[in-house]
Image (tube, rainbow, N blue to C red; front, side, top):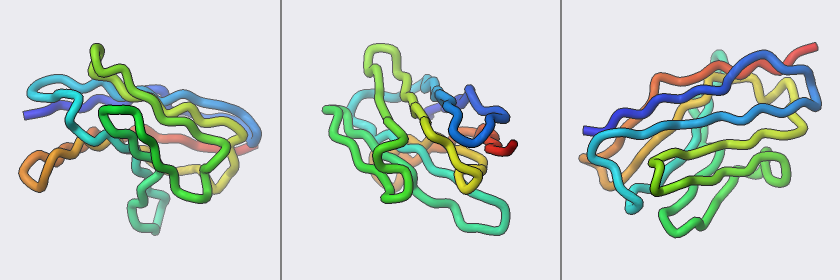
Length: 116
């Protein structure tokens, strides 16, 4: 089993920044694909960013150039640095660890609200 705990969400003004953290514990290793998803009210959960154990990253188009995903394998921690935040970024952000269909874990989510 893997446990994921997100932190770092909050209320920020448009143009501001936040850094989300995801601390993983349990049977996790660097092979796991780590991702951040988000879900806005009334919308489906969407993939925001992904990082492999080797550091290869992928971003959804709407956050490219503004968000940066990173991981510290030795600490089993994944980060999402979010800059130039927009109201459309408002959502609950979830951390995900994936290593096959039988090893797919989610955190409880952290709320990010971008508003003036």
